[in-house]
Length: 115
Length: 111
Image (cartoon, rainbow over all chains, first blue to last red; front, side, top):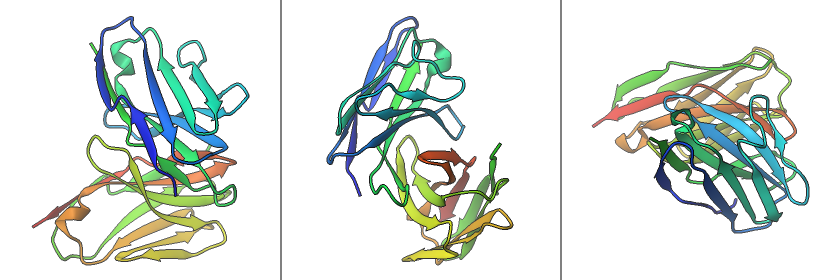
């Protein structure tokens, strides 16, 4: 398994601003993922973050809105840019560590409220 | 396009009952299926992972089964406790590293 931490745990932001969320893992992992969970909804994958390459975004998500960095094998950031109230969600990072079972482990999430 | 549905959406049971949560998926071409627990405002805790070649997995009072041909999985919780109250999510791995999540079942176990 892996221990994953996220910062901040929650934040309240004004529309038009940006927030960067950090994800730290206690071991080196190849694959890191960013998910969004809108109020009352299930999880939706935003992008896959590989170390040393550009993130791969899912349909409906673009780099200008959700830029991602992956500087090393234990750390990633997700920025939510030019926020609007519709961006109010829980943002979660996850990792896949085994390389075989595709089992994913999740961080505690960042609860974002945009006013 | 893979779709994952969970029934029921919400469930309230008295303490001590055995219960079954259902998960269905439309495309049987999956790598695995994973059950998670999510407490309010929190992240996800992995409960059980079933590989596509497996039929079931057990951990303590939890048992998960997988029937790929029918596109179904069940999570059985024995002797439910108030501490089991949470939202339970199933997710299928549809490609390398990509999970599709179900809509979740909100469980409340009454003391």
